[in-house]
Image 1 (cartoon, one colour):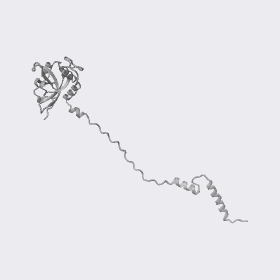
Image 2: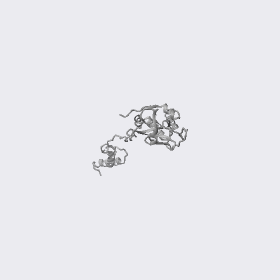
Image 3: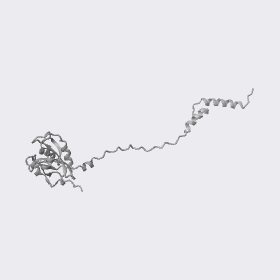
Image 4: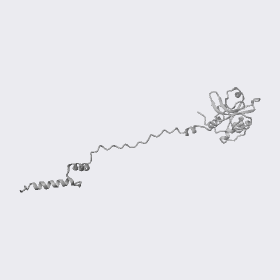
Length: 212
């Protein structure tokens, strides 16, 4: 029996299609699923908008503490002398003692000033001659030495202290000194004992600019 000529090509075509399905060549495969796989591999998936990169922000700078340079500039040598002298508040008194655990009045002033490079004699009468004269209360400044008379003779120098503050309105001052009754203390010039015995003041430190 003769087969129709048209069937032969169809049979051969069927065999060809079967062999193609079994093949491993990527581009020669005509299988539908393989096509989809190949297409996915070729066609790029749609991408969203590229994320805009924000410039990196540096951490906020920590607030720097206020510079102490301005404070040091405003601080006078007199301020420094007073601050150092106050570190000895409460130190006991002993006649002839020059510190740092015991002081008499001139031993105390000498010890404090020596810390800042000023040499002076450990005797109240000599210290009164060694510095520069301060004419009046109005001219006083921190760090000046103030002198007082003795108990028996108010005109003979017997005691010395360091000015720590001035009250211009009252015309008085506060001073730190080694007292025979209380050791290193602060007192007011308005106290009757010192007011009656005040003799004068001397300056060893540089003059400070006067307030306008």
